[in-house]
Length: 509
Image (cartoon, rainbow, N blue to C red; front, side):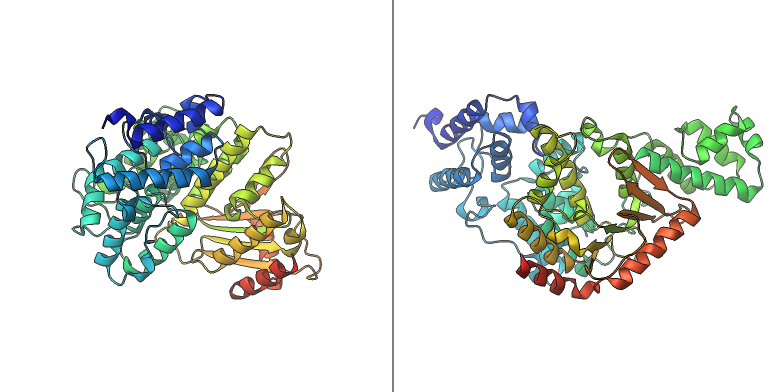
């Protein structure tokens, strides 16, 4: 049979036809609407190999196609290839049980059934096979997404050793593999629960060998934006300076700068030169090579662009500052009186909220903002914990009136409430509902309190307005909002009773 007339070229031709019907958008424009690179999308339409469902789904979504129709078409093509016994590019055939990854007939991989670490790794490998990815493709996908700021790189030898069971993985790496295989937020939470059970020593506290084999953590600080990392480093340098009784004038003289620059550095308001940090550490008597290396690494990381930089066209500067703080925070306590918090919104609810923005955004802007929200949710769902953290990652108190304020259609609201019911039972989340008849509480609107793993950093209160935001870190101001949060939390439903409250509200809709 002529390979140019086989199922793969025919499928690719339909993809190209869909793109033409959508006005022939560029592949780069399509990539901005999904989490795949333009090269991956163009290769799917070139017909050189059969794309897995996740790539197909991204392509169809970017062209506003009918996902149900295309799922059926993809499954039919996968069945034809399975009957042939091999891919037309010479690769392994997508078998009926391993290619239908999205409701197309595959047996779901349920990590909750794993009783031992080898069983969990076997399930993880099965998930990889169902996604139709080789180990090399898995690593390449992680690099592609990292280049676009949407995730971290999965080292090749780590992935191979994890899946073969020759190396005990970290929870974050297991969740990264699940994410690369097309796992949803709900999937990540299920895998995170099992990782907490089977990988008690495989979290961020476990040292990962570095390139030099030292065994010291390559990344001893929690993630965050450059501003937050500068603040961490500046706070550390200030404590070292004060412990030695050295004035800002003397410290400034050491690095050939003024005392005011030392103050700005310690407040995280300016960038750091590694040479200046090295000279200050010498002045402060820090001779331990590991401690010096970690602080110099922090100075280097403070110059690395954020993952959200590619969305700068649709994100205001003040919200980028908040995203950096959210990355570095170990606890988010939020009280909301208008809307469900962004980290807890469903896609349909978030789309309805975003479309109501002022000024009204274009559809492209809406999709980009939804991408930012989806990335934030995935990172929160990954269950990242800082050493010694025992509190829930997100603690939200929602005013009950939120659920009676129509956002989108009735189906959108019901879907949102059902999602919150599911989330309320997940680890890392604590949800409460403040009854409508609870009375008046002097909160002056919604707010979020961020706490950081670095105990030297003060808590910060985030107040968002229509045209900007305010960040409060004065102890007196923060304490005032902490008291307000404690008051509304005490009047709200208990976290273990929130699902029952939401179920009652759902019946009323």
